[in-house]
Length: 396
Image (cartoon, rainbow, N blue to C red; front, side, top):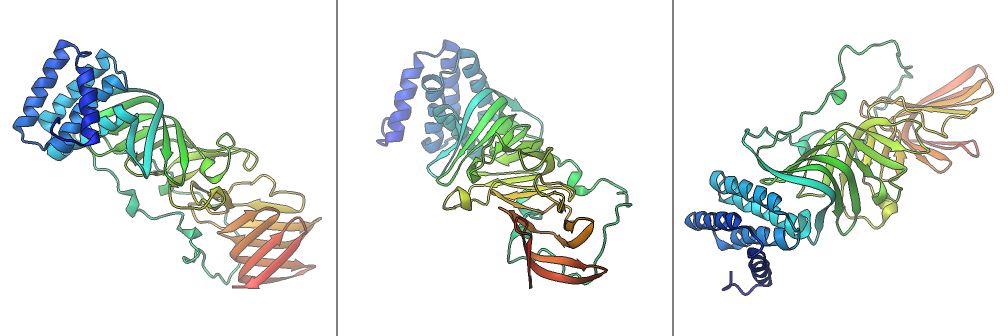
């Protein structure tokens, strides 16, 4: 370490040297024995040795870990060195060094996963790890928002919904998603708040709990809430409440297959659905397309969309701060406009977008009523300015 002239080696060496006199004799003895084992295994000094001594030095000098917590860390480190290969041992000390030095699970210029309001402990789980589900290859239920991916069939027949059908089994999107079972060294959080910081976003996952693998960075947790601040909406008014979920701390991406959305002023009750956040390049909060949410079903009433002249029933989705009618089950949403006891028109679409005083759809079925007659079109672009009661239609 002394022969290396890098700033990193100097910082690690200084922290470790200062911390040494603050360690107990048992801790000093264990560290010397671990150093001997690492040397016999012929591991390269950088980055493994740097992270090993850095973890200890920063745990004492920056994290101010007490004797009990530091001893627990060293016991887990012992099992890692004995049982894991070189790359996994290196990964363990990289995670622990970031944690003790920056109080983060990932720390680099382009992305930082900072930790606050946490209560943590180290553990080593000897059970074999369960395979982690690769959600990147799963069907993207949000792709119906892609304008290059048609989301609706060009129907030629007006169909009323059959509300008498009863599902024979629970829909797949309502069934619990199995979570990975961690093994090896883990960092357990009784409570923790994560702050995701990138050049484009500062997002917060509050008050969750769970464990993170210190070998591959998989966090498995439950509960907690994620606010819509990245899209310019107050987290007090708009947030997603997690059930069980997992994500990799090395990427600023989080998905959840089950949870509830709170949107004060837009929906009366919490809405069940799916969630996704990904930090991607965008100019400002208004252009953000994350976080995302989509309701499971198309039976949501949006506040302000049902009056004595207009009634909306359908899905509820958020793409950034934009509101859509999408739902996981893919059913049509319905917009019905009346005048007194007479129907003026009924439109159905899988993808209405709700703006200020206007509802649009790139493709919708519409039935327009006039006295005892009506006309139908299976696929039109729709724009309804409900404040002015003005309907505009154009063939797709």
